[in-house]
Length: 364
Image (cartoon, rainbow, N blue to C red; front, side):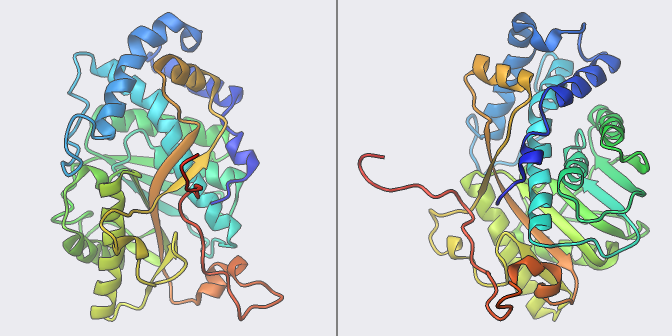
């Protein structure tokens, strides 16, 4: 995956100013300059960042356990939310933006005059804001007017995310993108949306399936039924999950089960686009010790870099697993034309390196 330099550098001092002013307006920070105060960072943020990092990396529990709601696992939930918002939200935002920029790099262009988007498990709206950042720095032609439905089970985080998305959209010139928050708990084993819900052109799930223990075979069926009912033709689905071995393999298993279900039910309206450039079997599933993930680099916000230094963390490189699919019967050459060189369209570039390459040897 190759992210444009403009995107990688899009989170510098200006972004820090935006997020600091927003946090001050929301009374999340005690005073201006808090993000540059070592004392504040050390006392109010870093303990919660380390706690969340440990939780997300399954350091204190088995990887086969789902993530239960974690906002109440602290004696100071306000600081826990602030830590998540300031540290994990921007990096998750960038991950989603990177996926969008990859679609742009491969020639994908928005084909509808409408833009109606959904983010499930929205949290602080990192997915919606990631799409906004991706479109700002690597556009595919999204309409200037559109709306987002944000669905989240934690009301405080949902309200924070809706307010932040509105602010961030404005900074990027997306003033005509409206937001509707929905406080709702979703059970993937039952379904994702009520039958009366509308159709969407874009469906985003960022670090959402990670929090649920769902059977991939059953999940493939429920998702397909939801997309048949609630995803417009030519619509796009983006799923971003952790790069941890078990979570990454579950996403690969979901991809496999989707392909099996589509073939069994003759559902030829769906196509997998990324990261694999086709419907071939996943080689990473052949060996139970293998998995597949992407890594992207970025220029961290100044306060973010300071937190990394103080907490002895390093988020300059961001790993993640992802899956992109579309509800379209168009040939892949029309959806991702950059894969088909004009000089030799009969020889598409359908092989790619999806994980970082490392040299092997005793000196490495």
